[in-house]
Length: 161
Image 1 (tube, one colour):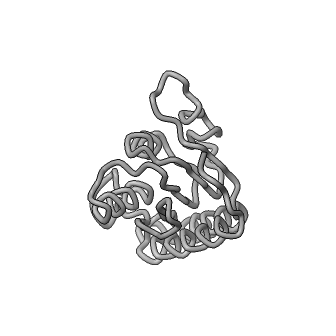
Image 2 (tube, one colour):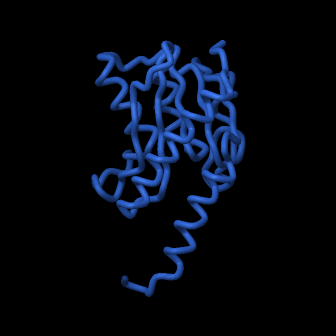
């Protein structure tokens, strides 16, 4: 079990929110992710970039996993905590499990594609071989508000613009 420190969790989630803002400035859905090593140091950062990179796998979590794996020189990240502003999707949950992330802390629930309890809970699936601890709802209103504002602005844009 990875120890939790609520004040540090909030600090790291705020850093993930800053990354989500970066995604929004790039015209991407504003989701940010941060990976913290067992020593409490940030080892990976990412934000949504599927449009920029022409890559459907370039979700915030995957980008942070790639960054951390490169920095640490290992595709396995045991003992690390991933902070992400939105509940992971199935693709990201699979990548998180393959990386052996120990703990996932997310902000807003995703009732359409979230697999940490909203649609299904892949992290609780006993037939899978790795199980991260999952905590949802960290700074949820701030994370959800960022997404709501992004989609509201997108709906106001004229067609084709």
